Image (cartoon, rainbow, N blue to C red; front, side):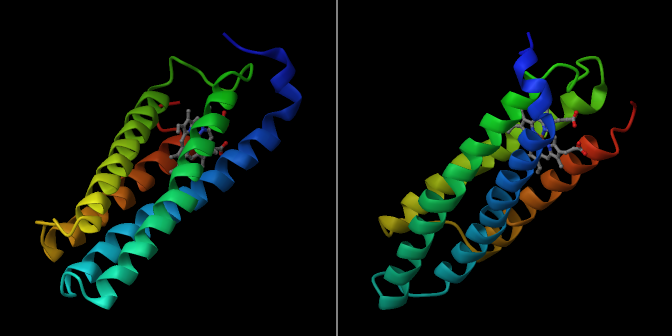
Length: 151
Ligand code: HEM
């Protein structure tokens, strides 16, 4: 199903999609790094309380609205005539990675709640590793969307 009225807006919709992606990615790269630093300070300390404020603002004011905007403009692109070739393998790989990225966002949100309640049990090493997940997914998604391997 496509909506003909979206065709003349295609490049603007795509621009807004990429702008939202940039804001979402910035947060996904930085939030696990904040968790690495948060692990290094004592529970209940002034520094810990400051990290809680930074984590809440980053997630609620930037990352979640940016993720919603990425999905909304992405879906508008899907509904634009001729934008997606459903038989192309790259599209399916991109979609799978985007779903995994959204899952990582959900996990990051859960970890934030654990820090908020002073119940974090995960190590610095864990968050350093977690930091690499959105990077790998982003590289795959951008190569799929732009180089479109396999046509
Ligand atoms: C959230 C779900 C998403 C949906 C439904 C979606 C869908 C789409 C669609 C249909 C296009 C237009 C393809 C074309 O030009 O014909 C597009 C373009 C693009 N998307 Fe997404 N996308 C999503 C998330 C993402 C994410 C997370 C990233 C990056 C990490 C991304 C990066 C891009 C890029 C770079 C383009 C421009 C490709 C080009 O035309 O050169 N998208 N997206």
